[in-house]
Image (tube, rainbow, N blue to C red; front, side):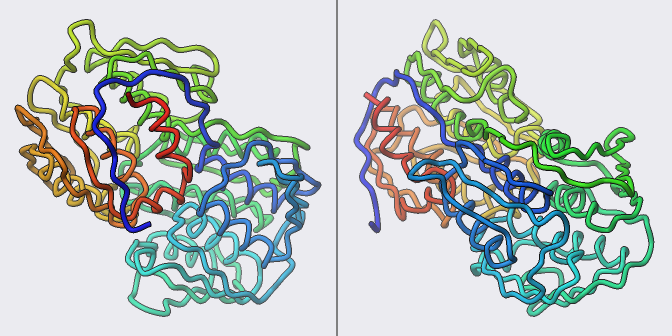
Length: 429
């Protein structure tokens, strides 16, 4: 389907059961693959990103079996390095898969080529490669220096300390932490500069503990992986609902009256993006939360409040705030979002372009976006999505202003939420 025409809507209410978290799904799959024993992964996200991870793990010698027609998978771990020592892996535009598998393959003693789609080859990976090389990894760039595709050769282990910049992508640190138990040596990672997206590192640490590895942490600047670290299957693990995906429906409730309740993520979540609900509350939305659910309603007067917010802790969910800003009572500024520029697309530039199409005044900077809502949204705007799932899902919320929209390339949502538009139609009225 080249495009999808979304009708105008004026209200939103209902209950949504969330798909599994992408961040947790791909972390759990890799850890289960490296662990000793068999892990049943329950409620795994079914999406493009998890499919490329599953395919890659099969190609590396990991046992992968779907449990009947469910979203459960049985992963037979290899108890250490990958047994297949020569493989070429295609990883699409899945950053969570590409970064973590780069690190794991670099320390598995094999010869591997890792490739992706054209946009993946524009997303930086040099900081991770440099960090791995300090530990003896041998990695060549097959294209532009600092970017995929990569050719990985068997490592010649050297050194027990490495460093990685923290201000480009937290996935570099995540990849290192998940792979370093393969060295069987005490290893220290030092973070250079401020670490962005700390909640995502929190997810990584929590998942590592579930598989029996506890990493020593000195603030957010130094992490120590002990020599005795070994992954052990927990037997069974459930994947939480995706907190980033929850943001679209919570925002719909805040914009369209509500109540809209999301199930599968809540007060007990390990995901930092649950704090999106706090940001909506700052905009005046009425939020309620339980251990495994969150509910949002519009402010009493129906109009959201503008805000000026540092969004470093919720980089993905902050995109939803940019569209919610269309319904605010003044100028909204989202700061500390430089990481948007190296995601599936340059999200600051893309968001500015598409918000202008619906009538907003937008100012963009290196690490911020400022949005002034229009008096009236532009009807029948044609939204480009840049092969970026979050652009498509975020901009669909503009229809709650009573205007129809056309979404180009709606299938890009398959990356994380293939049923998104069907689910959205179920709550938009």
